[in-house]
Length: 120
Image (cartoon, rainbow, N blue to C red; front, side):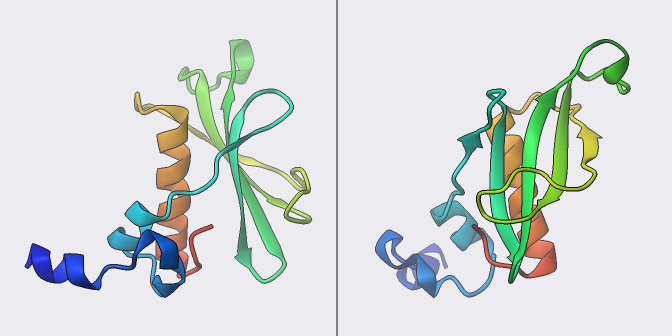
């Protein structure tokens, strides 16, 4: 069965063959993680034509750390591919010990898989 999967998976040079956000496509096509002006890692992708999203990891302390986790996954819309956050971000406390980059990749992969949009 594994040999069958190996023969049908898209090559790294032709990722456009990935028509559905299945595990094979997600493994082969990792997303670009950037750093914002505060050094926070983020991924920005087009969720729908002209509908851009940004997910990033934020460190909080004091009263801002409302869940006591110190790390939060934030997601917000953006005006364009290069634009910064516009609108109100939603924050999710991160209780796992996964590195920031893995949290971002898993989140974006899950959102794309559930909504059916292409991986960035």
